[in-house]
Image (cartoon, rainbow, N blue to C red; front, side):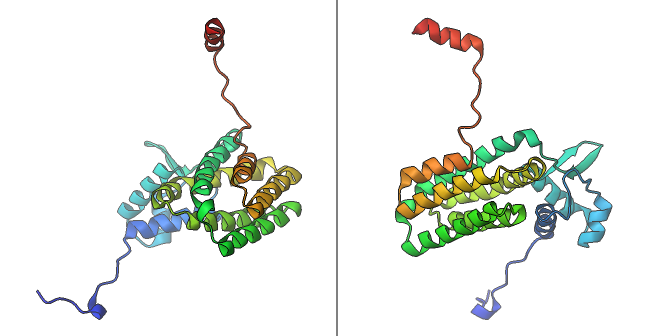
Length: 232
């Protein structure tokens, strides 16, 4: 078999299911498809210009990631996040971010640190102006840069599969709940100061505050407390 030259190497083909996945996911994230909106196979086929099979494959992947929910013989729709779960999803994102910070900060170049600080400055400005959409975009830019600097590719692949849906849930919830703007700005100001001071412990403490990791603690059953009291 003749060996192909450099110019003859075939380009990677993008599968129809991947194109469908990217298009539907982007439409959910940018609000074209609304939370709770039903996803009809026929309408999706007409919109995407492809057959049902790759669309169903894409919807299955989006269901696994948490963007779509289905009920057999009933509906397929964009997930409708529960406002009550907003803090739980925030904490989930925060656990990933703490891991990324722990793995990234020690080897961070000065230019990269400065770029992260500039991103946080833009985020703080958005929060101080009570600009929800601007704050969400500034947050996306900051965390995208931070993730790109993390040396652990395995952690990043896992984060890519899980964090986008969590961030979507938080964004939907906070659009409904509203934000304590001064509190959010203060939390990110603490994170900015810690980054500038290159104080890893202060960065972790500020990140825990940003993501409210200590805000909700599980309540142990009474019999567990009694058992502990008996052992003391």
